[in-house]
Length: 306
Image (cartoon, rainbow, N blue to C red; front, side, top):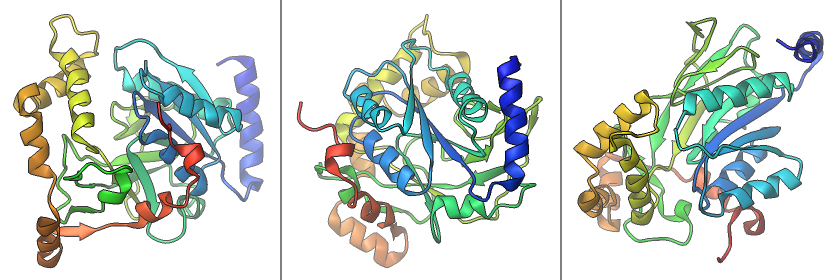
């Protein structure tokens, strides 16, 4: 570790026992998320996140300009990552370590653009501030919101139900984690667990945090994911081996380009199906994220016409 980093770590060790308000840093790895990234950042800042470190991975839409808005407000540090190698674990680990070393974090939330962390009572900050000092890591369950049958102007207005079974809409539904800030942390691919010195940190499950996940927001978005995922099927794909295996399994089994519309329609229920599902208990209504996002300033969080 560099001398400057060692000095920062020592300062943090001295300050932490006397600090009442934990400093929470969120990391984001994103690519072509202009419909949701502004909402994600503003929402979590309102939930008590102090600062955001974001890595933009070769976005071709207006995601970078949305991130720059928060840079200008002093709320975000932006890293540009042009390589199309999808080294999520490596890039997120870099941000998580930077959160500890450079930005004086106490807690780190490694997030995705389509995930919104929610406290059953109070705010995300309230939950993390109440954690005992010997709690290093929280395992946080997710629920997938069902995609809309009709395209809506804003994703959250028409995505208000999830399966009562907790079954995933797209791919794997493994829980995510947040953790104490450490300069030697390693975040596993997918943000599903973290390690120090090669050992997985123990994960506390008894807490009030949940994640509301919006993985499929429109048929257009699904088709963009397919085009991106097809890169993993190429013989000389630049994606790392673990990511390539996951994408190959998903796309060969479910998401061939000519199957996208049928795949989407099977998961996008109409109003009658939703009403019947809620009445029968197979669907659960969840509107807390929608209600919170309605309070945000569109001029800040939306890309606008273009």
